[in-house]
Image (cartoon, rainbow, N blue to C red; front, side, top):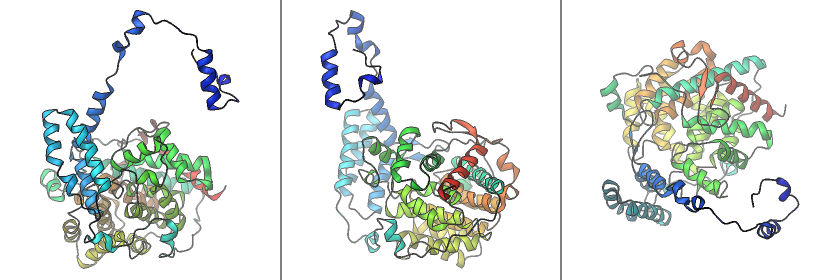
Length: 475
């Protein structure tokens, strides 16, 4: 029986549907061709092996930097104050299985690594446990007093124009960084010298902004009532590429594990950069309103991240929201840092980076201090990248070109960093502050791996962002 009509299901319980289906289905004898079903069999086991081989070792699309994401998972769990020695015992045997093509052992060992990480005991001597764990935005508000929202005295067309410029600046920064992400300052300089522009033809393809598109879609459907679950459902429907924390979260979501548990179940990467890399969108839909931007960022971050991972998203959301009402980058930076709970570990990172800026006359000595202090963290972790953002903004000041130069030379997860901080220059200066060299290669065209935005224009994304802004205002 082939079930094709909705009418068959209407008005019935699941039990009734199942009973009716078996009662109404006549037996049918297969032909020989139909019986030979293995002719069209897809070896899903081979696909799974390839999937996990790439999680053991791959090269980053765009920059070809090596990425050991599962070794990074062990590192990440250790950075969160856990004893990971049992998981570390599996590294060499898993590498041997990888090199020899022993797929069965590879799959078993990767499963055991996840098991070891989920069962790892706390290392109470680790400094991570000296800081409180922030589990809700209400807890955040107990430590931070946000300034009142300020009215944006611009016409709708002027707001759209600024959002358009902000998106263009973000995409330009992301494209710049995609080419060199995953490398250190020294190795970037050795290979490319001082990076001050695109090293090859840039592309809009970047997984970072897929999650921002999901946010826009969810807000435009639900307005002020939008929830983390609404955004998560847009992930499920429309996002076709994920990695690390977002990949685990999406797998959890598809199995009915929704926020905040989607961020926690078997997710060692949930304090990596994945939430921080999508925060600026909330400053675009909540201009001049840092508390609303922060609240929305916390809500969204809870899909895939926890604690300091979510703080990173809040940081970029507040940074962008404040850029609508202040044109002095250093002031915006200082205000944003101050709006992070002062007893959090994330605050200690951005505060340290800012202090280094105050002590040095140029960006590199300040960055080198941060680079050394946070060397125990993966290049995709929130902390070294947050420090790089602070340094680039402080020394770049009102100059987009110089800010992009500095953030490129800091290395780490450059596309995330350059895209986020680049956004505020579009807000502050509009297109007048972004040189044509950053814009011309795109001709306002945008391609992505997000359903509905496969091929569109940056202007269209800006208009959709403006619609989300008005939806949040209840207009």
